[in-house]
Length: 157
Image (tube, rainbow, N blue to C red; front, side, top):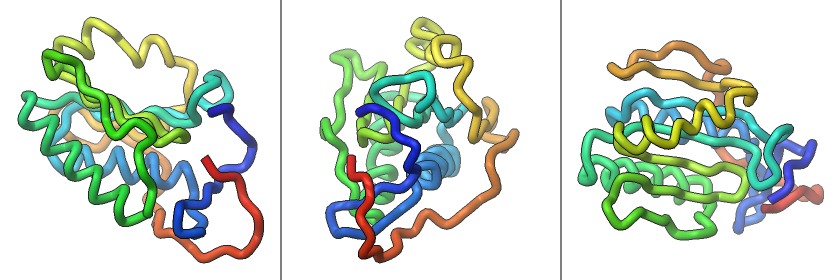
């Protein structure tokens, strides 16, 4: 998906929500459920396929599956559906969830160190960061990402 200047998206139910807010909600949810080194980046100005990346480290394959389930709850709340369901590497070291406007990466520490996605997207604007212990290091102010009804036309993903 090519980035647009419009930061709003309409979900399947016709409700309008802020793309950045849902990226932040994904990051916060992962962090609340013990993902490590969670980061959310705005990459729309430097990336042709998404507007936001969320990257987090899981402690194990079972933890990654649990994090994915918690994100599914967020997706259901906002009536958004991953474009790919989710893609997991054979060895369960990397799970990718693609919403179009947000791509979530849940990785083992080994995969994250090997692929170094933060270095690849270093020029993206940082929205959220938590450290190894899950301590919050900074982000945009918390905001409600709850969908709002809208009759005006908007960009859909």
